[in-house]
Image 1 (cartoon, helix red, strand yellow):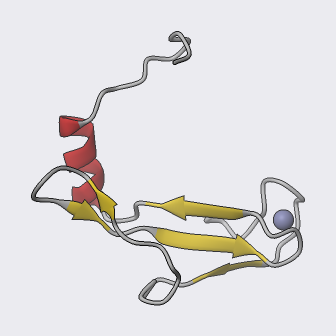
Image 2: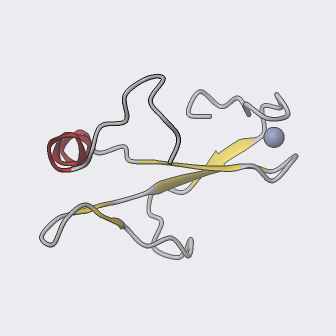
Length: 76
Ligand SMILES: [Zn+2]
């Protein structure tokens, strides 16, 4: 999605709003003190939406505080 290519319909009509102030998406609450901004990408052909935590520090915080999902782990 971030490469401008929709993974669902394979169109190249992907748009992003990095300000995300009016996208209707709140930031992701990592823990009590930290939030991670979500950057939404929308495919205007099929409507597929994908959100990414683009800030590297936020991804580090999530990796430190959230439970890792092991590959092949049981579904919950
Ligand atoms: Zn699409």
